[in-house]
Every structure is written in structure tokens, then in C-alpha cells.
Image (cartoon, rainbow, N blue to C red; front, side, top):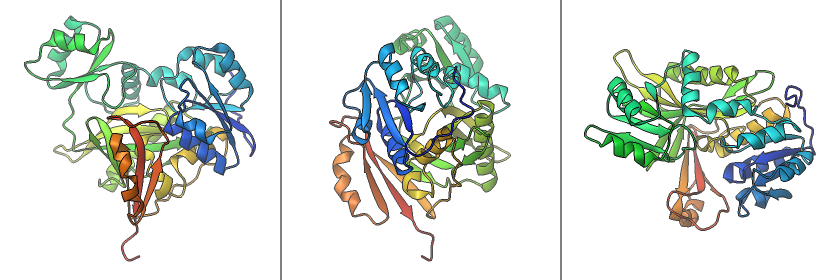
Length: 368
């Protein structure tokens, strides 16, 4: 394993990015503004990140020779998605520093391992149970109750790989529909709102958090984010503290997102951790135009060994709206909206559920 503690890039050095989607694209654009080059590795020849870098590698993650050549061309490696194959990460880590550390993926790629990790830190989550068969699912339901959410332990995002179980459902049929041998059952959380914290941590242990963000989903896909979330200051501070504690426990370097539920109970609202995303995150896109430093620049700073920025929100409220599927065709309407900035990802044809771009809108402080 390479030594990641002493990474210190200088302008002109090269960052390798695994994954060629919109997150990789925006990371490369943030790096370019700081005078750093990027090279993208992706198996998809239509990767939108390829459009904004001089050098790209289009190869499968199982192509060891391509991985080795890629590593030889860069100074540090990062990733824009958490499902990096373990074998590919090992090949790269033997040659160049990989940040965040590939060992973190062993925790965040597995929902059960992630929940166990968070619980060991003394941080609250929904009740959960390991499920490997119909009998174990019935036992878990008896313990946790219904409704509950059954999720695959790996490879789920935007509502994929999960199903809600309610009273009267055919348990055997539900298990078969998930098409997995390893799952996790989570108690259904009657939340007041969903929030996330985007946190950055440097190799030296410095942590900077952006404003807590409220997230609104439609059809299990993030549609709108608002910063700051309309929650009490004490609760926002608790949420940021939880994100910082998780980042520290992982010895994390870079940007991560911690998704949480806000619950209302007899003693006031409290938060439960839902998921950790070890990368820049959709709910942090508002920072591109709504903060003094974006989540993408903050990630680049962290993995380059540069000082983190102190995030300052530009407006009283900043919103981010995803343009999903055919909504991308409305981009011209957004261009004339005061305070709005349009981001188009350069993907191919739109299809239902595909994130094609987003719009940020900054509302200036009252009186201006």
C-alpha cells in the first residue's frame, strides 16, 4: 500500500479520477481552476468527464495493464463513485496514493458493515438486521416490525435494490424480487425531513462542513436540495458533529456526505444516520454557485494536501434542482431566471430517472 500521509501536489501535477460521470466531470473542472490536471479512467466511451480532460483511459476496471499505465501517468488517484471494484483499487494502491483510502470502501460498499460501523460510534440509526433467506427475513420482521425496508447490501442507489414491506405482503415473493443472497432489513423511519451534511477532511485531520442541507426526493431520486435546512441551530450543529465524527473514525481524506433523517419526538427533533457516501454528492451541488468554495474544490484541496477552504454561503437560501430525463429540454427557461445558474452534464439522450443537469438558485440576503 502506498503512503497517503505525505501527498502534496503542486500546480501542474495530475490527479487520476476513477469514473467518468458528472461528478468526475465537475471534479476535473474544479481541479483545472487550481492549475491541476486530471486524467479520467472509465469503461464508458460516452463518459461526460472525458469532455473536460486532455487525457482519458477508456478500459474495463478488470484491465490490469490499463490500470497500471493509468497509475503511471498520475500523482494521486481518487474516485467519483463508491462501487470501485476491490481488485482495481488494490492494483492502483500498490502504485499511487488512493484517496480516500480504499479500505474505507470495504465499509461503505456494504450497507450492513456501514450500519455496524456507525452503531459502534454510538451514533443512532434505524433498527436493522442481517437477512440471508426467507426464514431470516421473517425473523427480522418479527423483531423490527412493519413497515420496513429491505435493501441489498451492495450496489443500491436512487432507490434501486430496495423495497418497502408492508403488512399483508408475500414475504417469499418480496425476497425473490430482490434477487440477492445478502440483504439488510431496516425499520421504516417516520421522518420529519431528510437532510445531509457534506464534510471535508484533510490528511492532517482538519474538518470543514458545509451548511446542513434539506433534501426532497421524487421517485427515490433527489429532486431539490435547500441550504440551509430549516432546522434548529442546535440540531444542525449535532448533524455536523456526527459527520465530523464519522470522517475522523474513517481517517478520511476528501469529501463525504452523510445522509440523515430528522425525527420529531416528545423531547424535540433528533437525527438518525441513513447512509454514508464516500465521495462528492448530489446534495452538495448547490455549493458550486452558492458557497465560497464548492464541494468539488474542497475534495481536490484535501487529496492534493492543500489547506481546506472555509465554506461561506453566498445567499440567504440556496436551492439546487436536478434536471431529470426530459427536463433537460427546459434549460432555456432556467437561463432567464434571476439568480439561477444552469449546469448541463453533456450526457447522451435523456431517459426517465437519468440526471442530465442541475440548476442552482441563490436568494440574496434580505435588504440587498
